[in-house]
Amino acid sequence: MAHDEPSKSGPQTKLVIRNIGLVLSGDLSNPILDADTVVAVGDRIAAVGKEKDVDTSGATTTIDAKGTALAPGLIDSHVHPVCGDWTPRQNQLGWIDSYLHGGVTTMISAGEVHTPGRPKDIVGLKAMAIFAQRAFHAFRPGGVKIYAGAPVIEHGMVEDDFKELAAAGVKILGEVGLGSVKDGKTAHQMVSWARKYGIQSTIHTGGPSIPGSSLIDKDMVLETDADVIGHVNGGHTALPDDQITALCERSTRALEIVHNGNERAGLLALRTAMELKQLDRVILGTDSPAGSGVQPLGILRMISLLSSLGGIPAEVAICLATGNTAKMRQLDCGLIAPGREASFVLMDKAQHSAGKNLLDSIQKGDLPGIGMVIIDGSVSAQRSRNTPPATAVPEVLNG
Ligand SMILES: [Zn+2]
Image 1 (cartoon, helix red, strand yellow):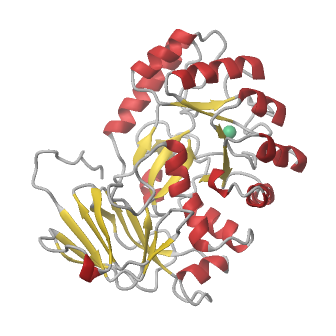
Image 2: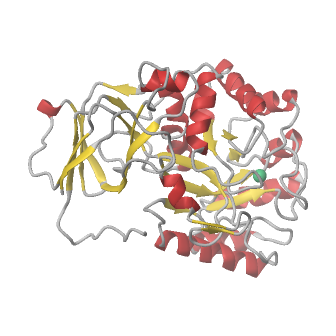
C-alpha cells in the first residue's frame, strides 16, 4: 500500500500518543526525555512532555502506548533501491514494506546500481538519477520515505553535469567507486563539484562488493573526501584495522557502519569513534538489498550488535540510527522534538527476553519487538510481522 502525500488543504489531523513508558529522543546529548505524551498536528510533532502539561484536546487519533517505548522512526543510511518495491538482485517484491516492519521510516539511496542495464554514459546516468528521484518521491511503499536518485560518477563528467543534476532535484551521489572513477584525484574533483551545488556524496570503502567492483583503500577515501565514508566496516570486505582507525582519525566525515559488512570491523570503528569522542559521526545502514540479501531487521540488528558487543547504552545506539543520520543527511526526521517530522517507532522488549526492560534487552543482544510504526502523524503498521512479538503493544483508541 502506498501513502498519498498529506493533503495540505484537508482538515488538520491531531495525533495524541499517551501513556508512553520511555521516550527515546534520538539526540546523543540527551537520549532519554522526561515525558509520557507526544502530540502531532498534521505531519509534525507539536508537543512532547507530561500529559498534564501538554494540550491533548481535539485529538483526531489517540493512541494508548501501553507503557511501551517511543523512538524516532529509524533511518537506513545506505540502501540500493531500483524500482518501486522490487529488487532484481534478490528478485523480491515488497522488501521496503518489510523494512517498515523493522522500524525503518526513511531510507537513503547509495545508488540505484542494481538496475538491470544501468546506463553508464553521462546523459543516460543523469536521466536515470532524475527518474529515480522523481519516482521514489512520488511512491512510498508502506509510507516509507526513500531519498533516491543517486548517480554513480563516471569519467567524462564535467562541472555542468553536477549543476544540471542539482537543478533537476538530485541531492545525493551514489557510492563513489562503483563506476569508472577509481582514482582519488578525479573523485575529489567531482565530489567537490557536487558539494558546490548542494549534492551530498558517499564513497564505497573496502574490498569489492560483487564481481566488477574493486578495492577502495584509505588513501582513495581520504583523497576523495566524500561527505560519508560509506560502510567503513566494508561492504562486505573490510579494510585492515589500521586503515579503518586511520579513516576515523584523519577524516572528519561521517562514519557509516552497515549490516552488510564486517561486524568485527564495525565494532572497531565504533570503539575508535568513541575514543575520539566523535560518536556523533557514526551513522547506520544496511547496504541492502545486497549479495547478503534483504534485511528487514538490519537496522535493529545493528543497534543490538553495537549496544551488546560495543558497550554503548541502547538509548545511545538508537541515536546512531536516528538523530545522527538525520543531522548528517540534513533531514527533519530523527528527533523527538517540536517541529520535527512525526514519524515514530513504538517498541517493547520481546516476549520472554531475559532483559528486564526494553533497553536492558537490547544491551543483552536481543532485538526489540515493534508494536507500531507511525509516519507523518499516521499509523503505517501495527504489530510488526517481522520482529519477535513485543510484550506490550500500543492500541489505537479512536480515529
Ligand atoms: Zn559499497
